[in-house]
Length: 206
Image (cartoon, rainbow, N blue to C red):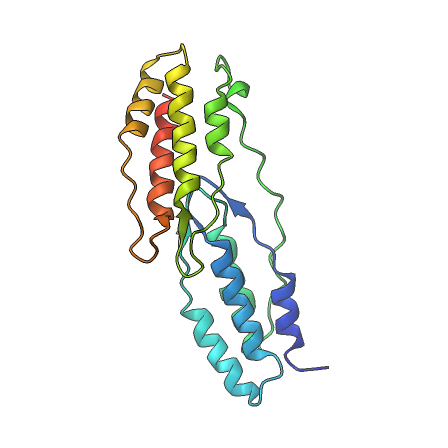
């Protein structure tokens, strides 16, 4: 059995809680990083050097964050890297992996709140998912984002409810000016879109 099997096994068994509507690490960035560590330590020509390099990479790791999309709980990831993976790479006794916490309860729908009428627009916005326009940058496909905004505007325009929150949400949507990412002509900056949609959601709920 290879001497690096315990490290590979720790990484393969790692599970992180996910968060949404608060900052979390991009899941693909964390997964790709851990895959790189596995590749580095798995059957290396110089195991000691590979482990030292892996420790340096783990200790210097930094991941982009997301808010509107699902992301890994940052504390879960940091604890695993610092308290489990680094000691294992240094061949020091490692504590057992942190227990996998139960996923957080699902967000209550607007209809579950006392005296809050069900709002299909809010539900539609919360369920929105966009394909990435580029594999080299975090961009959302512009056509999919534009389609969602058009659907929201049409629904608000046809709605008999002209409450102040929905009216302000419609004004924000109609005045939307998404920034195209400079790295891809076919996508919008995911960070900009996420922040904009959070603002729309806040106005709908007001």
